[in-house]
Image (tube, rainbow, N blue to C red; front, top):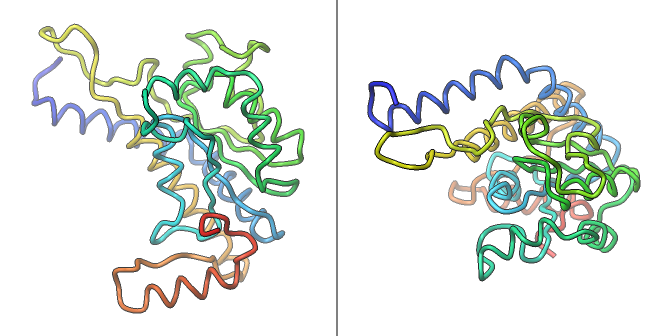
Length: 251
């Protein structure tokens, strides 16, 4: 580790990654925002999914002040978050063949919808199968993943493929294999993961693009306001009433 406090070095690493996304993923972000705007304009619904810690970036864009009211969370029991006991069960479920298809086949997702699948490694059976099955159902798929894993690890899906191989669009988070930005001689393992910071920023950049694209087309984006500002609840209730057939998190 070079000079600087661990906090300084982590901030530097995160800022560097965000700058890389800004410069290297600008076209993909624009395309993803446009795809979601197209889906909204055509009457489709929006969904996001992530397993384990990848679910944090998915949850961050659902029912969020300043966010699109139409973004729904696709949940897989025992996988979304680390609240399951034992926590290692979630990791095990990501490797189970057939789980993603069962979830999609019983979910509200249908042809014409869009699904954002967030998986840092993109190597487990769950995200790979989910992307495959979703596209077979006529659902547009945006994958948010670290492409480096496909070059430096092996797939855990029977096809030998990764999430990135089954998407209409791929957003590369640039996170290094292992998801730890810092090393120190006195600590035997690398530490300080940045994937949540980076992936969350990437998702917000895409949805900001979606909102602006809709506005450019003369469509008022269905945005939520904070419930902690005057009039926020009334605003949100109106949006939810107008788009109730495309919002599933309050049912």
